[in-house]
Length: 69
Image (cartoon, one colour):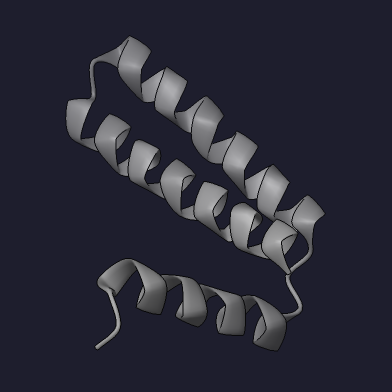
């Protein structure tokens, strides 16, 4: 049985290869989410801040998956 993290990595790698997403696109999306999280934190929008952190984590994992391939 596959671990949930392993399955997520496999799916993200397949998603990247099927969508032809480049490292530059992922980096831009990561930086955008990072800037959004900083703004949300400054404005005290806690739930939006946490959502931006989750988005950052998603793009970071995708970048690691791209580098691993």
